[in-house]
Image 1 (tube, rainbow, N blue to C red):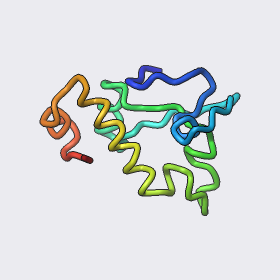
Image 2: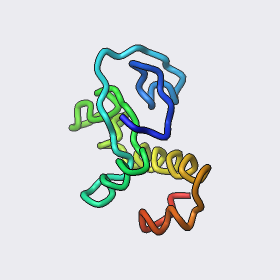
Image 3: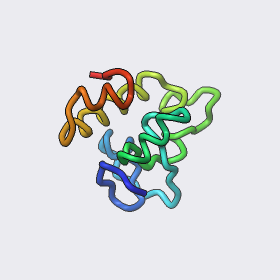
Length: 103
């Protein structure tokens, strides 16, 4: 998986972000910017991370720690990713590609 983020093997991006360095046998790829066009752009620029099932989709019915059911967590990932993207690109580049700024 091509990503602008460095992750240890078996490490969930969100677990590590919260200081919990737990090894996971299985991780899922998460495109930070999704939808048909944005998924392709996430692929192009490596704007994706590996997440444990709990943080990726978990029990969708009520897991507020899963990015797909927590809008605040989704936005936090978008802000972190945009900051990382802007280490090598401009904010204007980001806006042109993704239509808005999350910062």
